[in-house]
Image 1: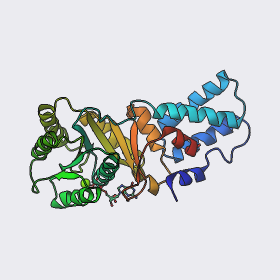
Image 2 (image 1 turned 90 degrees about the vertical axis):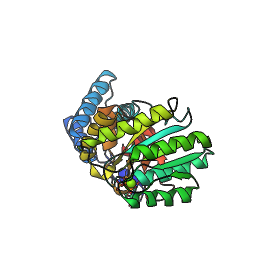
Image 3 (image 1 turned 135 degrees about the vertical axis):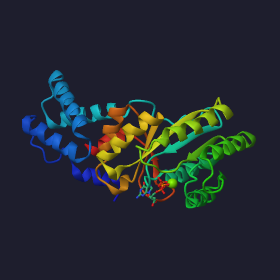
Image 4 (image 1 turned 30 degrees about the vertical axis):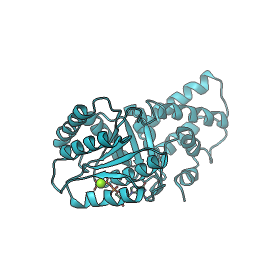
Length: 289
Ligand SMILES: Nc1nc2c(ncn2[C@@H]2O[C@H](COP(=O)(O)OP(=O)(O)OP(=O)(O)O)[C@@H](O)[C@H]2O)c(=O)[nH]1
Ligand SMILES: [Mg+2]
């Protein structure tokens, strides 16, 4: 069963009484918190809904449902949802804690962009474990894209340097950079990312840049905490929310988008190469409500 089907099953609005009374708003709040939207975001959204229903004299559940979708869609469209690949070689850096799906998402996106006719390269910036480069190599071969890697334990910034040089020489359109998974409170995160950033600035000063934070949707509210800490340390331009196939609680997307003002750019809905989709706020809120 796909994520949207699961979410539909929650049917936030389905068993509601027909009047917009206190019970209605209470039950709505409960449902949104259950869907992982977070207490704070839920309360703000429901207050906003009350205000709009009052101002626009909406008195029925159907009308309220439409308004709620409108409010959540507004939260989800803060910031630019597109990935900027306009100035080549565009560089897209993937960061996030262990096991969230960074390498897998890179593999899927490399295949997608290659399929769109772009010249794609992946860069094995996770030098922490030898297996990391092996895993990325398999994805690169599958997608038919270039890979730049070094030995285990190499300086990630040195691998990125190699990738930038190769990308310029080969006229690559986009370089996807993998990084080692790490806890958001590790001190060296900022140092390492800064070093990588300086290499890119020096080698490819005119390139488009994105830093995508990869989050596992099944971690719920903890994802919001991770997102806040990474945002402070690294300046993220977008979120990739993975493993939505494993949860019916995608409301965390709304909490993150609203609280950080950072758009969700892609969602992962499975382990296969085609299981990564551009995030569609309208389809999402319609499925949720
Ligand atoms: N069901 C499902 N599984 C996913 C998705 N994305 C990734 N995975 C799985 O999650 C596991 C970890 O994925 P990786 O890509 O290795 O994660 P990572 O962030 O690179 O991990 P580290 O390099 O160890 O930090 C793998 O088994 C993936 O197949 C998704 O959208 N849905
Ligand atoms: Mg990895």
